[in-house]
Length: 141
Image 1 (spheres, helix red, strand yellow):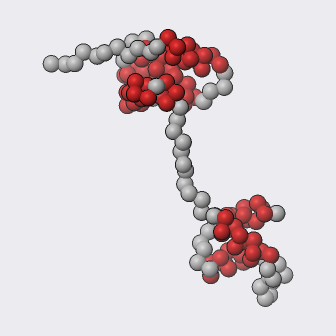
Image 2 (cartoon, rainbow, N blue to C red; image 1 turned 90 degrees about the vertical axis):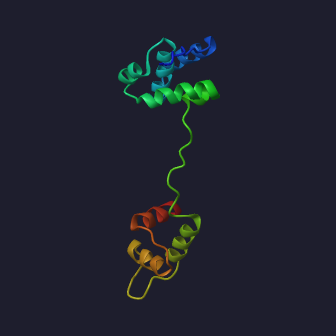
Image 3 (cartoon, one colour; image 1 turned 60 degrees about the horizontal axis):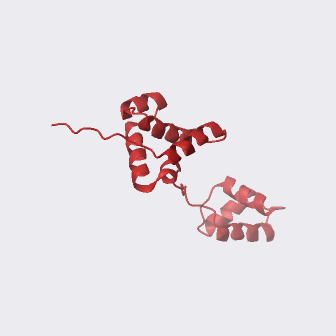
């Protein structure tokens, strides 16, 4: 026996807030897709129809509905912070690069180059790319 789908209903205040976001202007496309998915859900569209209209997955529609019901409107339409990849060049590494660059150039060289600094870092067991060294030096200068 199949389950009867319960209608998805937004409060009047939430509907007004969503309408304002759509007409306001500067909002990311990802956020607008979440807003429109909630509006379409309220209007009675099935998740498969919303998927075709907005180009998002059915799972996204179900997750949005669930998040709205459990945590409210703001949590449903806003994204979580994305931490990203941790920094490879920490402040300690930047300090080491600066210390090397400010020291006497090695024998046979007039001045430090990015390659020479990176060779010295490798001897200190710090493995980063030449471009990271260049950016760290540019930040200090």
